[in-house]
Every structure is written in C-alpha cells, then in structure tokens.
Amino acid sequence: MSVQVGQKAPDFTLKTNKMEDFKLSDLQGKKNTVLLFVPLAFTQVCTKEFCSVRDSVNSLQNDNTQVVGISVDSPFALDAWAAKEGYNFPLLSDFNKTVSSAYGSLYDNLLGFNGVSKRSAFVIDKSGTVRYAWVTEDARNMPDLDQIRSCLQQLS
Image 1 (cartoon, one colour):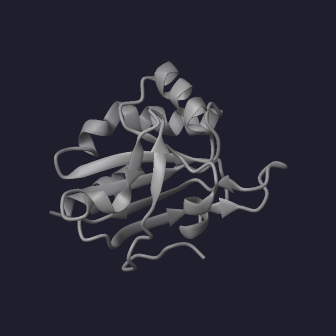
Image 2: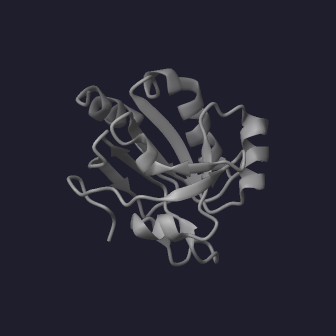
C-alpha cells in the first residue's frame, strides 16, 4: 500500500546522481519536497516526464520547494541520463529499492523486470507530512504537474 495523504513521509537517505547523500529530513522546516518516482532511466515515457519537469521546473521548484527524481537505476546511469537531457533537479538512486518499497511504489514485475519503481508523485510539506500522493499501475501514465503545482500553491 502506498503512502497516503496526511501520513508522515518515510525518511530516507539516497545517493544523488553526483554521488552525494540526499536525506529527506534535511529539508524539514526548510522546504516542501516533490518526489517523482520513475521506472527506468533512458526509457521513452520516463524521459518525456522528466523533460517536462525540466522545462517547467521554475513553476515547481523555488526557495520553498525542492524537486527530486527517483529510480532504481545506479547513480552513474542517472548522471549520464541527467547530462544527456539537461535535467536541472537532482536524481536519486534507489538502487536497493528500499525507498520505492517504503512509499508503496514498487512493481513486483514490470515487463519481466522485478523491483522497478512505479511511476508516482508525492508532495511533502515542510513538516514532513504527505500532502499529495499519486501512484499508477500503468507505467505509461504520467503525473499531472498542474495538480502538483496546485498542491504546492496551497503550502507556505
């Protein structure tokens, strides 16, 4: 079962595509966070989603909000993907699948691959509470960025 609106977001520490530690709770009291889980780097729909985020990141990310992408790919693959596509937000490697699992965002099997992140989106406020949660079983569906923006506008 995925994390629900109103719940405390599970804390985590993951490596970024630059091999730096990213700890969710480090943003508590400072910034809202948008977590965007995608199945696999370099795939068509994942690239389309993150390019859309890249192209509109200024309407999502600011002094009050940090956007991060998460997949089960290695930090090295994510760094190559970020460099190729010019992503302007951190990509986090959930290589061990612990965060995807904690958020209820892990496929048992997707196209023959076990343990791939489900395409999903979560908005976490500065107190660490989930304010928006969207998880899809169909990896071809993308989150509605307008709904995420609307949620963020309601947060301080």
